Amino acid sequence: MLNYLASRIISALFVVLGVSCLVFLLIHLVPGDPIEMMLGESARPADREALRAALGLDLPVLTQLGHYLTGLLSFDLGQSIHYRLPISELLAQRIPATAQLAVVSILVAVCIAIPLGAIAAVKKGTRWDHIAMSFSLFGVSIPNFWMGPLLIMVFSLWMGLLPVSGNEGLSSMILPAITLGTSMAAILARMVRSTLLEVLNEDYIRTARAKGLTEMQIIWRHGLRNAMLPVITLVGLQLGTLLGGAVITETIFSWPGVGQLTIEAIKRRDYPVVQACVLLISLSYVAVNVLTDIVYALIDPRIRLGDGE
Image 1 (cartoon, rainbow, N blue to C red):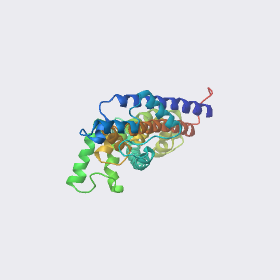
Image 2: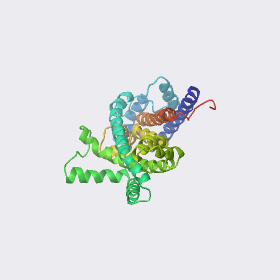
Image 3: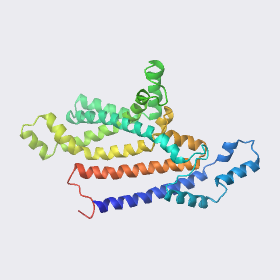
Image 4: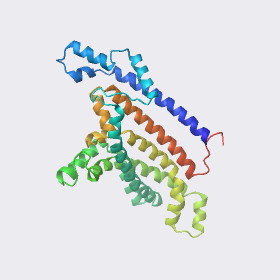
């Protein structure tokens, strides 16, 4: 188990390193000059060159990459070109908002998906199954950039019940959490249905019925517990996405998280901030995948990891 986790962590670090280098090089190929955006088109050439030298942007790209990787080894993400602040401070301000939105969105998705998928599996082929799967198809088909403005129009502009944007408390979190949660719930519900259908045909389910357990006990104690492994994997991947920043949703609702910071940095050609945000997203995926493997082993003792066990 320990050897497996160690190998996973080492390979994941190589992935993060490769992603960081690739993003660094691609960002420098994107048209646009951060110096021009900071000083404006009317700035004198001498002022531009002085600022470029002060920020180290006059160095060769490979030299800048070397400085960037050296800083990462000392846990130094650098300084924002636009804000003139350490990037660690910017991320510390934005990560809590993204984490809050991610957790609430996952809770919304799970609370919708598990009952919906269980009902669809138990009532296979009935009207309830068709309704549940229609909702799933509906949720998957509607993109966030359409669902978000629709919710704003209905609940904010027409009914006046919820704030349009920003982070002003729990009420501000409802619409973005529903926007993210419903799309995830649609995917999770289909996964719950398919895995639960397989589990309900197993021998131990028939044995439980023979012992006289109620259908509710069989489904919730035996069926769902053994059907949750693929669902946990999917939840882990979705959580990694949300922790990295739900870029579209945060932009629509002006949610002050990592996603909105990424968009702002791209617009301003703030190279160090974009690199730090992508690095954070990569680390989120890596951490969530490793934690998912650990949860796998805890939930199902039959799963043995490492050393060919």
